Length: 225
Image: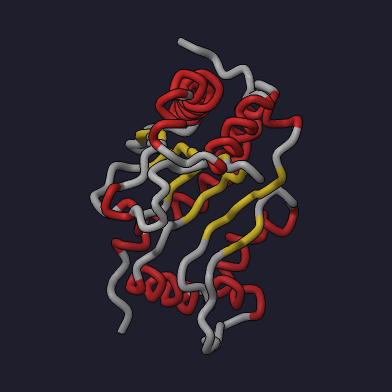
């Protein structure tokens, strides 16, 4: 097994160069560099983090995926066939992965991020979420209390323009999201180049695991009346 030893400054340089030279001829000429400085470290990081999560957090049926550098041909509107970022995800297999909660790590030329959330939650999922809060606001406030004692993750996601009346002030930020994630972002720097990055992601995902368990059960809630 290839262990994650860190990304390198060459990883960052490659992403910027790809952004400036997003063409097939340039990429083909630099494909081996892509594999060595970008794809292989991302695969190693994803595998190491996934295996530790699977070991420490029991059987939740997780799989892990690493994104492809190639854009979907149906979505190439800018003439640029390659992504300048890569990510891996840890999730349960789903045909509708965009509307299921996933753990992720993403690296782009400017910054890296990781966390837990939805790419785009279904409206019915969010309606069930609000109904669950309405049934017991105090229980929800106790559930989210650990977030107030840490500074790694923040709540993120588009909000409704017309605010909905939440049952409590602390629930309001959650109640008015169209979708949401708990995310950490920071500018690219030395931490990317250290093997300890894997430990940080594992610790973060383990902290977020109760939130995953909460979100993944929303679809089985009864439809709101």
